[in-house]
Amino acid sequence: MPRSLPEDPLIRSLVIHARRAQMTRRGVLAGATAGASALALAACAPTGVTKLTPGTDVSSTDKSMVWANWPAYMDTVDATGAHPTLDAFTKSTGIKVDYREDVDDNNSYYAKVKDQLALGKDIGADTVCLTDWMVSRWIRFGYTQTLDHSKIPNIKNLNPSLLNIDYDKGRHQSLPWQGGFAGICWNKQEFPNGFTSVSEMFKEPKLKGRVGVLSEMRDTIGLIMLEQGVDIAGNFTDSQFQAALAVLKQNIDDGVIRNVKGNSYLDDLKNGDTLAAICWSGDITLINGSNGDKWTFAIPDAGGTLWNDNFLVPIGATHKANAEAIMNWYYDPQIAAQVAAYVNYITPVVGAKEAAVAIDPALADNNLIFPDAATLKKAFVFRTLTPAQEQSYGSAFQSVLLGA
Image: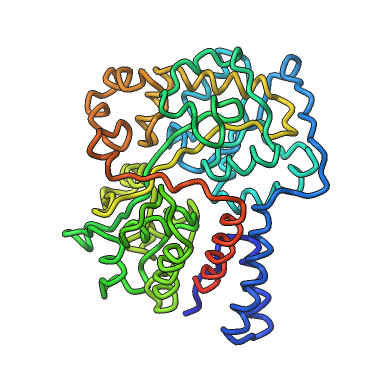
């Protein structure tokens, strides 16, 4: 049975071309390396581009905006598809929000908009929520607009530990939306005893061809590196990264790993194509609620990754003040608690835990939303890579994904 195509559009097109040409696997991998290297060049700063000019803000006359986000990341009434907190925002401010679940993977979304960004053009979204490392890239390239904190007074509720991160000290270009863990999950009806590590999943005979992993390099490789005893938050070496990559490649080549995907990995869990996966924490609670209580999420004994997805305003966006208004709205502890109760990710808003008690006292004890010290001790932030490392590691990772 042919393996599923990778999610990344560049690598996907390369695979299709290779299959049509009936290339040998060695030839495909050689081509993939070239294609992946081209993709990884996106990590390098654009050349010959002058400083970009922010789009003209028309918020005062146009009470609308577009918000691009990941799937399953907003409170939703399943029967109607309505988003109660968004509807309340529109009622309160008069600003109509076109909410789009456009982000399946950081790289694939960036690939769609990078040419427009490089020209300072409007990408069709006034705010986008992306993961730390990708936000760092956008800021480095000058692809974001500077936030006006005076229009986001609720920024005072930001968890202080998230204020002065290395890529945006003082949070002038970005603001956290939700945080979470990458860990492992499995179908507990099939595997009632569960797993404590990624390698256990890879070695389980009944899981051959039924394991999914994430196309987010820092999560998939990060979990493997942690099991190999590597400090992913510290100054790990190229050889340590390559050792983890070799494990991923071996399990792809051996047919253990079925798919490498972004957020669409959830479809494979729901339809039974995969029975275990490297996954994101809140997703499992969500699909358990809508598809039967079938899955268990756990942070591996060796540790999981910890990350944040963040609001940013793209350089060409034309509704900046409206985007700042929605950031301010979701930094109200009452609103943040409503979202957290649905998505089961870590809220960055101080006071949300107390507000959650009024919704459901059990929420305050949920370590996926309000992690305690013991949980956080098992979670590690994959360190910020240099542009050269981002290029070389990304190229190597994408080359391996060709076999997925």
